[in-house]
Length: 117
Image (cartoon, rainbow, N blue to C red; front, side):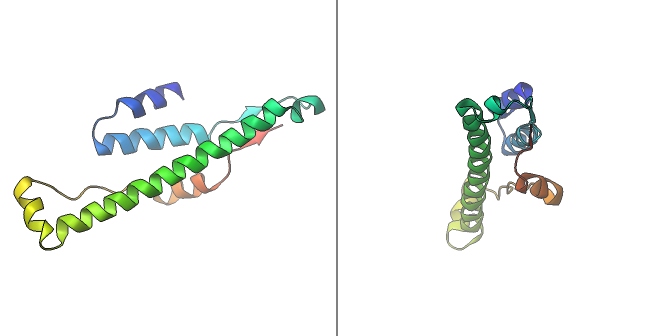
């Protein structure tokens, strides 16, 4: 997971960032917390906080993807619609790619993180 995080931070192009973020998201989604079946541990406030943090991270990643795609859609529309397309063509602005998880990735991201007891 630390390698995926480092790649996400160091990525420079949009395609590299999307690839790195997909790897990071997969690593976070695949995170499984194995906890011994002690009632005190299950009821521990620290453990409850961990569960909330995992859920919060997944929600923030999904929100960031939606924001990125919304901004990219607006940008791509501006690049293609008159009269801004004239300025975009003159200064070399081109359409950018959307952040797409694909069908398999989308199904995986819609599932909650797996926390085992």
